Each structure stands twice: as C-alpha cells, then as structure tokens.
Amino acid sequence: MSLIETFQLALKNILGSKMRTFLTMLGIIIGVCAVIVIVGLGNGMQGYIESQFEDMGTDSLTVMIMGRGSSRSVSDEEMYEMVADNSDLLKQISPTVTMTGILKIGSDSITTTSMTGVSEDYFSMKDYTVAQGRGLQCTDMENRKKVCVIGQYLNMAYYGGSAVGQTLKIGGTTFTIVGVLAQQSSDLEEGGTDDCVYLPYTTASRLNYTGTISSYTITVQDKDQVSEAKSLVESELYEIFEDDDAYTVTSMAEMLDTMNEMVNVIIYILAAIAAISLVVGGIGIMNIMLVSVTERTREIGIRKALGARESVIMRQFVIEAATTSSMGGILGILLGYGLSSVATMVIARVMPDTPITVSPSLLAVLVAFGVSTGIGIVFGYIPAKKAANLNPIDALHYD
Image (cartoon, rainbow, N blue to C red; front, top):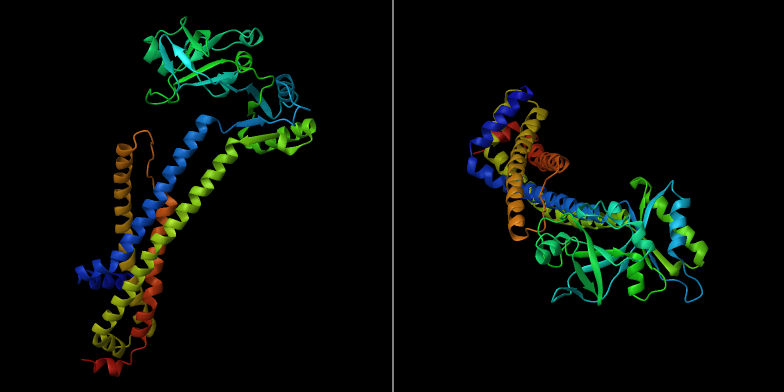
C-alpha cells in the first residue's frame, strides 16, 4: 500500500466518526490556539515597549552626576568638551534641568506640566518638530534669556492655538513663549507628552539655585555603538571623579533589551503552561487510537493474513494519529488567529492609549503545527505498535 493510499484510508477512518475525532483533537486545538495567542500578545507587548523606548531615544545615554561630596564636580563645559573630543562615537549633548514650582498662565495655576531646562540641540536629539515660532537658540543659553517653547496641549488649552509671543510664569518669573512643538501623542491631555515647557538650561539652573548641572542627555553616532559609547563616558567620568558612585550612565537601548528579556521570560513560561494541553491532547489521541485498535482487531487480522507486513500496519496507525493531531493543529491555528484579532480589538477598546496588536509570528505558527504533528506521531506509536504485534490467528478469532 502506497503512502497516499495509507493517508486516504486514515482520512476515511477519521471522518467516519466525526464527533469522536473532534473531541480527540480538542486538547490539541486548545493548546495550539493558546500558544499562538500568548506568543502574539508577547510580540504586541514587545512592539509597544520598543515604540515607547524609540520615543525616548534608543540612541541616547542619560548621565546623572552625583559628584564626590564638595571636592569634585564636572561642569557643563567639560561635558561638552568630552563629546567634542569623542565625536567618532558621541554626537550631541544637552544638559537637562528639571524645574520645580508652579506654572501660571493668566490666573490659572498648573501643577501637571513638566518643565525642563535644555540646550538648543535637545529638540533635534529627540526628533521634536517646532510647529510654530522657533526653537531655543545658542544665544538664549549664553544670555540666560527668559524664553521658552511649549507643548501643543498648553498652546491649545490656554492660548487658543496662538501662544507664540505670549507669556507664562514659572516660580514667579515671566517667560516669553517663542515656539510651540508639534503634537507628539495622539490625544492632547493634561499631564501628557504635549503638556510641557522647555526653557534654556542656563536659565533653569539659575532659577533652581544650583551651582552645577547634574543631568545630561547624550546621543551616539550609531545605535550599534551604544554599549561602546557608554563605556567611553563612564571611563571619562571615572578619570574625573575616581569614584564609580559619583555618576551613573544609563543606556536606553540596554534598558529596552532588559525589558524585552523580561517579557520573553514571562511569555515562555505562559506558553509552556499552555503547551501542557498539547500533552493532554496527545494522551487523548493515544487513548482513542488504542480503542480504535481494539475495534479494528478483525480488520488487522484479515490484512495480516493476506500478507500485510507489520511495518505497513504500524505506518497506517501512526499516520492516522499524526493526521488527527495535524488537523487539530490547523484548527488551533485558525482559532488562534481569530482570537488574536478579537484580543486586539478588545485591547484597543479597553485601553485606547495602549496600542498593543496581538500578532502571532510565523515561527510560532510553524512550531505549533510541527509540535502538534509530532505529538500525534509520538503518542500514536504505542497503539500502532500494539496493532502491528497482533497475532493474525487471535485477531481473526476476536469478536
């Protein structure tokens, strides 16, 4: 009997008892579906995390200077010189000074707005676009000018879209608005990405009464050289302070890798738990194939009496088990894609600000199908072996 004929006979036997076959495949269907949805959710979470880190800049380093008591510190001029001397790795630098105090626009006092002192290069480093007016300039830094650039939320909520040329107050000091950034997030909301004010870092430093600047953002020439650039900055700072505790250098790319590793571990654990149902499905297939061997004992006896070899009998039952599990795998894949689409719509409705797309990968689908087929072969071996080893005389007398 050829392989095609064996497969056709297997399909005939499977379809001859549709309900029993479906119940046998149920464990495989659920297992494959669960694995695909979980892996798809993991892919969606990774995509969302990567998009969030892209907004913060995966090509950037964040440097925090704690200093070494009052004996040694580092000036912004020295930090700029460090970047200039290592231009093969480092691209741009901006001091960042977080402002405290209350923002006042007219008679309104606002506490949710982020207020940050930055350099003239900060907007290009973060890929921010100035939609109205101008950005911060070098002369603003040198002369400690009281000017600022605001986010689109403040522009629309408090100035009716015409903020350039108007004023606001930070800690009692009046600033003139010289520019408005283009909208960054999909929704303009209080406390969001577009609820922000940027002013010259030199001005912010003076208003904060800080003698030195303790935070810097540095971009690198090539994303693939982030680790090398981080080591360089750490080495330069160590030469200044001779103390590892005097500074910290954080890489957004390394943070992203760490987050992805954590997500992968969680997804692998959940997928492994879901895959337990595949084993349960395999046990169900083995059980039903043992029943099938018992039901078809006389058939097996007749075939062996007519000269069918043990290998042919064994192949027949293994193919039948593998076909059953493969069909369950296909149904599980289809159901998994359907549930993934439903899950994406549910997430979009429940968490509109968290665009996570449940997207199963091709590799996950291929692995799930391969495992489901393998389960059928493995768990179908014992019933097939039992069928092949039947004594034809005893089989013919079986009632």
